[in-house]
Length: 62
Image (cartoon, rainbow, N blue to C red):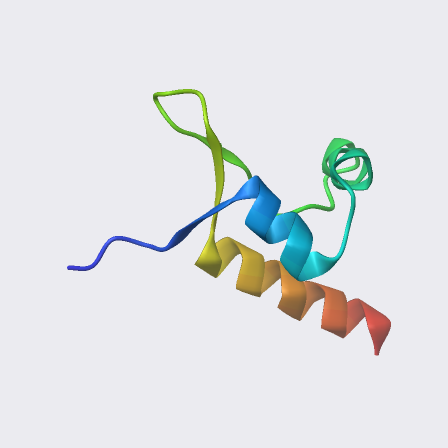
């Protein structure tokens, strides 16, 4: 079974065209994709979580 694709926070911010500060504000409101902390302390977002977040954004915009 393949491991899920994990994106660096910088990659996510580039894809959604958002600053780190704006992302963390959204995260504080519970409106951002889930961040996962790796054992080495780095942060990642799974591709599946980001895709689901995009889908929710599209539904709210409609």
